[in-house]
Amino acid sequence: MKTTRSTGRQGEEAACRYLIEQGYRIVARNLYFSHNEIDIIAEDEDFLVFVEVKSRRRPADVPDRYGRPANAVSDKKQKSILKAATEYLRQTPTSKRPRIDVIEVYLEGRDKTDIRHIRNAFYA
Figure 1 (cartoon, helix red, strand yellow):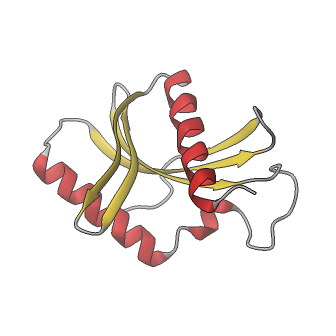
Figure 2 (spheres, rainbow, N blue to C red):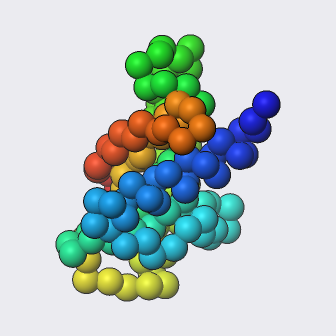
Figure 3 (cartoon, rainbow, N blue to C red):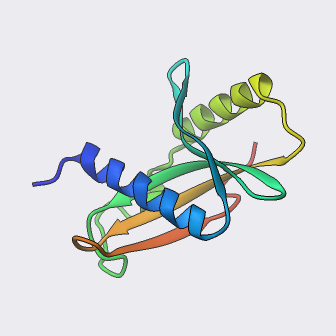
């Protein structure tokens, strides 16, 4: 049986592959500022994107008793991401516009994933 940690790791790998396929460059992964983590920082021509990845080990069209993975990004988690993003921007100034996205990853089998990218998932 797969652990939550391995599911999360697989989901982050899939999210990075997806972002690269979409033309993003991965800047950093799993950065911590105090106790606040950012899963992925990516950039395109215009945006510096802070990405929270939420993964589930099931097909996207099968209902989950917990709802969509993005529902797991609670108010508390949003504040944590905002604190980490703010600290990153303080330490690493950029001319790009910051954005916070959530990527839902559904691990449907050994090599099959379904990804849903929610741009501007929440605002500062």
